Length: 164
Image (cartoon, rainbow, N blue to C red; front, side, top):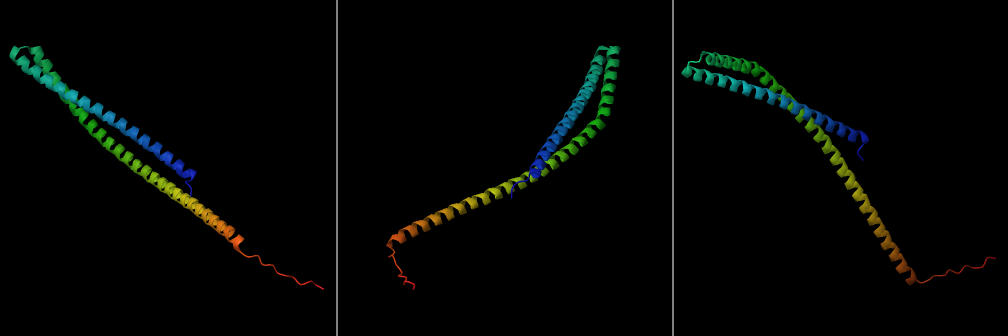
């Protein structure tokens, strides 16, 4: 039972699909990282604004205080706007991860079937080879046995009466 071309083709298609799912997962992870980085930057902007407000309270600089308040608000708004996007990106990453893992399992199952079939074919081929060697050896022994027995047999001649 040889591996059919269609089975090999199916395995190749599954490998390609798995690769596509992996690339989609990596793209989704990259997008999630960008959103998370933007969220961290927004939080840092909010912190800088608070520090600016605290520093302006000591120096009585009204412009610094206003700038600090605006930085704080902007950072908080940006952070609030990014939270749903980050959550959506995480959900998308998890969906892509599940698709990728499902496709990997499917490909591995197909690979297992192909490997098992190849192993059965190799085993059957080995058995056939061994049987051929066994037959050859037995035939050789029989021929040697017949050749050894032939000279030792007395020749029997049968006299045929003349017809007449």
